[in-house]
Length: 316
Image 1 (cartoon, rainbow, N blue to C red):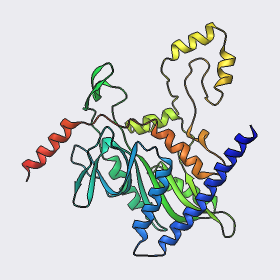
Image 2: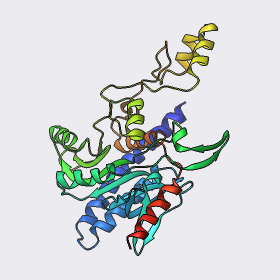
Image 3: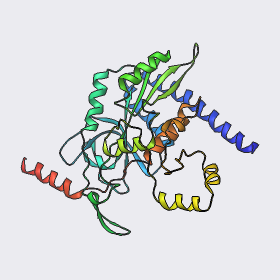
Image 4: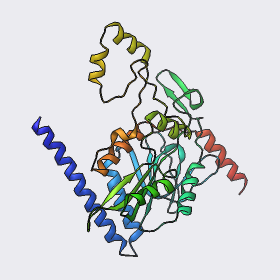
C-alpha cells in the first residue's frame, strides 16, 4: 500500500513539474516572433500526444469539412481517428479532414485574443454536420448510421490553449463566462504567488453529468436538465442484486459510481474527475473520459462525400 501511495505521489509531482516546464517553454517561444505560432503549436502537440490514446492522430494546421460543402476556419491542432475514417484530403500544404473523423479541435493562442474571433472560430466548427449514412458490416449484420442509435451524429471536443495570464479568481470566472460556451476546455496561464504560474484548466460545465455531456457532444443538445446516464442491461442487473439481497455489497464495491439504487442510472459529473492541485492530471482524466463518450469514429458516409465531389465537379 505504501509503495502504491508513493507511485501516485510521484506521478502527481511529475505532472506538476511538466506543467511548469511546459509553460516556461511556451513563454520562451512567444518571445521569438518568427517561430512563435509554429513552435507553440508543436509544444501543445507534444503535450496532447502524451495524454491522448494512440488510436488518434494529431495534425497541425488543418481545416475540417463536411459533406454539405461547409469548411471550418483553420484548426491549429486536430485530433482525429484514421482507423475507420482514413480519408484526409490534402491540397498543397492544406489538409482537409471530414468531420466524422474528428474527435478534438484545439485553438492555440499566445497572450492576446478577442472574444469575437474565438466565437467565430468555435461557430465554424459547430456549423459542420456529420451524416449518419455510413454503411458497415457489424457483428449482427450490415448497419447504416441512421439505424444505429449510437451513430447519429458527433461534434469535436473544443479546446482553447492560451498563454494569457490571469491573477485573480474573479478574472478566471470572467473567462469562464465569456468563453465557456464556445470551448469545452480552456487552458490559461494562472499566476500563483509572486513569481510562479501554472497552466490551469477551466471547464464551465464541469458540474454537468456525463449523461449531459454525452447528449451535448453526440447531438449538439445542451439540455437544461442534468440528465443521468442510462446504462445497458440495467433491469437484469438490478433485479439480480435485489433478489440476492446484495444491494449494500454492490454499492460498496462501486462506491465511486453515483448510481441511483432504484434505477441504476449514473449521476457522475465531470467534476468528479478533478484532482485538486493538479490541473494537468485533471485534464488528462476529464478529456479522455469525454473521448469515451463521443460517437467517434462515425461510420464514414462515402455516398454523401461522393455526392459532394460530384456536385463540385459540375461547377468547375
